Image (tube, rainbow, N blue to C red):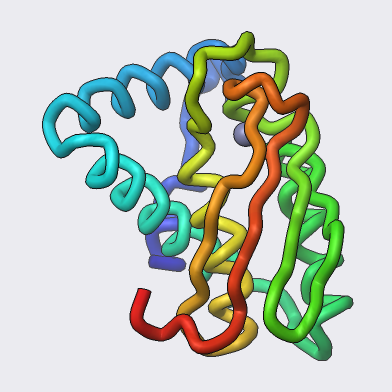
Length: 165
Ligand SMILES: [Zn+2]
């Protein structure tokens, strides 16, 4: 999967460059989500996006030094900011539970209330990052989302005894 990161990093667009309008990313994301939901049901679509995000989180986690959890998370926060995914802010990180806010979320920030939480990929990403550090499966939930009218994107993680997820 980290090979995939290298592969997609090769961009050759001499005229158009590397940047795209965020609305294009969101269109890809939400139209895919809508179609997947139709195809696999809500639960299936959530799991698919979340697990894809987990893989990315693990791949990114492997590129980051891991002396201790605090400095590891700081590296991840810098990556999330530099990649303009959002501003990842640890709300609480404890033995069994961690809560992160994702301000200015790439997917949902500024979106009106559409009555559902939609940032399954981001949730998976944060879970994958923690999984890479802790070397075990963690359960993850989106507990707030701008698309649900909750004013922020928030991820809650269960860090203990969650191998069966
Ligand atoms: Zn979000």
